[in-house]
Image 1 (cartoon, rainbow, N blue to C red):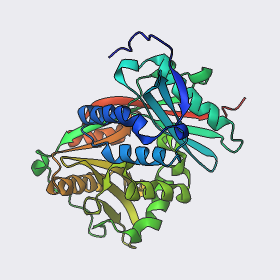
Image 2: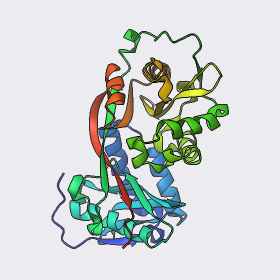
Image 3: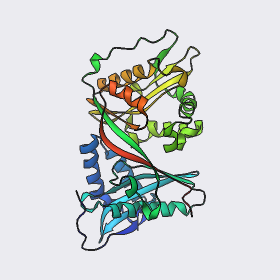
Image 4: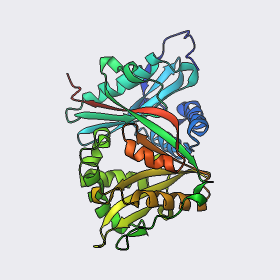
Length: 323
């Protein structure tokens, strides 16, 4: 829906100046949009935003039309990096100008911190694309990504992959955390996804990434029963799939990675098959995932399971943006 003609200009106000009720209509519309477009229950994330706004503990801005909040964004800072956690503008006010206004305000605040050298954002509800993303003239590097969906109804026709006898699969447990962190840093070395998310660069960064999946609702409720590790003859984790439930009917593959020496040997296929089968047993009628468009090898695997592109978005990275 195009933004309506404004009777008066929009303005920004820090989230710390609002109470949680001020964002109720914005978050309500955002929940409905996630449900309609992505079949995703955004309620846990919306409740977290509302709680932190109520505590005056969330860095961000609201977009106001008069006294009414019609959009918002927030960010978090960790070490050298800023992460724009969300940005949403209600349908009637969604426009290039308003989205860039919010995004530019976030970047301007982050650039005032001398330790922030990089800003990342993956905003699935952002309407801006490509050259339109230029808040305050600061254009990011953009990485096209796909949100893909597959039905679980055809899984019964996917035969188990007969793996080499020395390889075995086990369900995820916290005992695999350290090895999984090492695995992620190894697998994504030089990979395009490490340009998008610099947590992939080191085991310490990978630990933060994994803990976010396991402990926080941004990617849904973690499903240990649908998450698996592949072990080599020495008992080391050399493959990984982590899954969540994002609604009572929808599962989500939050992470898949296979060590280079095991790629092409059916491990990825079998990890994904088992994860989707477990999600179906837990009530999922469909499963989603996100993948970088340039990662053709992964997309070919996903297409074997019936995944189709349901939505396209962009990962955004600003680096060395301080003038």
